[in-house]
Length: 534
Image 1 (cartoon, rainbow, N blue to C red):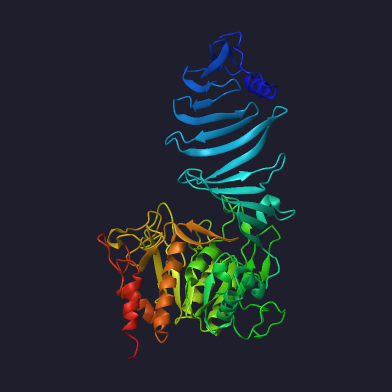
Image 2: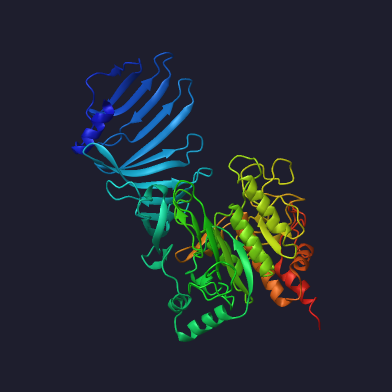
C-alpha cells in the first residue's frame, strides 16, 4: 500500500511524504512496520519479523519525493539487500543496488514514473565477478531494446558510445545488425554493418588521406604474402588495422561471385564464416567473415576476432589474414579449416578460444573435439599459437580434470600461451612481471607467457579497445613470432617455437610454465639473426 502511495506522490509532485496517522501497522502475515517521522514527514520505516521480532527491512525517506535508501535482512539476521535512490526530479530516479558484503555496484538503473508506472531510461551492465560497471544502455520510452550503449570505465567515465540497430524480428536475441561508434567528444570513430557491400579498393581509399597512401596500402594488399589463419568469432574487415592485411591469393578475385581457385568455395580469399545458432534461424555458411554481434554475449559490441587478428598482424610485412569466423566448435568448420591449412601450407594459426572438455557441461559436442584434434595433428608442420584459457578457479592445466581444449592437447606443433599482468613491455621492469590473476597455467601444459592484461587492439566499428585475457596474449606472441620469421623465412615454424622457448625471459619469480618465462622479442630476434647464412 505504501509503495503505491509513494508512486502516486511522485506522479503528482507532492513535496513531502506525509507522516502516517498511526505509529505502526501490521500486515496480514504479521509483519510489523514502525514509522518514524520528522517535521511532519515520513523519515523512516522499520519492518520486523512476526516470529522473532528481528529487523528484516528498513527504508529511509531523506527526500520529499520518496524512499532514498532501502535495506533488507533475513529472519535470522543475514544482510541481504541494499539499495540507494537518487532523485533527479520528482519523477526521475536512479536506483543503485550495492553488494551487501563489499558495497560494490551490483545493479543500477534510471527510470521515470509515468502514470504510476516505472519506465526504464538507462540500465547499467555490471561485470558479475568483479562488480565493476562496463556499460550503460539507453532506452527510448516504452521500448524494450536499447538504441544507444555507452562503454564506461570502472569510475563510470565515458570511453565511447554506440548507436545501434538490432536485426528486425530478432531484437529479442540482442542481434546487432549495425552500429556507429562515437568518441566522448561526439566524433564518429566508424560505422559497422554486418552485411554491407564490401569493396577492397573503396575501403582502402576511404581509409587513406591521399592517393599516395591509398596506392601504398593497395600495393601491400596485392603483394605476395603467406596466409596466416586466425580461427575466431569474426573480423571487421573494414577496420583500418585489418583491411590491408587481408590475404590476397592472386588466384581468387574477392567478391566477383566466381570460385576462381576451384576449391569449392566462392570468394573465400579472406576466409569463411560458419555459424549455427539453434532455434534463431541464423545458420550461416558464407564468405562474409564479419562478426555477428550479440548483446546477450557482451555488454556492448565487441569483436573478439577483430581484436585478436589486428594484434597478430600488426606491423607484419609478409603475411595475410585468413579468417575462419563464427562458431569455432562446428565440426565441419574445423574440418574445412584443416583442409585449407594443409592445401595452402599455412605455417601459423592462432586459436584464442576454448571449447571445454569432452563430456563436461557447457562444452562442445564430441565431434568438435575429434575435428579439433585432427586439425592440429594432421598439420604437423604448422605452429598453432593457443590461448591457455582464463578463469577464477581450476587454473592449473596440469591437474587432472582441469583440462581445457585445445590448450590441453600435447602436440609438438602447439605453443600454449598464458597471460602476464601487463598490456605490453613498454615502461615495465620485466623482472617484476607476474602471471595475470585470471590466466591458466601449467609447468607441463603451458609453454610461455605474453602480455594479456589491458592489451590495446582494434575495436570493431573503429578505434581501439583494451581487453584482458590469454586470448590477447596468444596473438601478442604470434605477432612477435611472425616478425622473427621475417628475419629468416627459411626457419620452419617449429624451429621458431624452439627458439621462442630457449630465449624466454625468466623473471625474479619464475612463471608457472614449461619455459619458466615470457616471450622476449629482442632475444628472439637476435637468436634468429644468428641463424641467417652470412
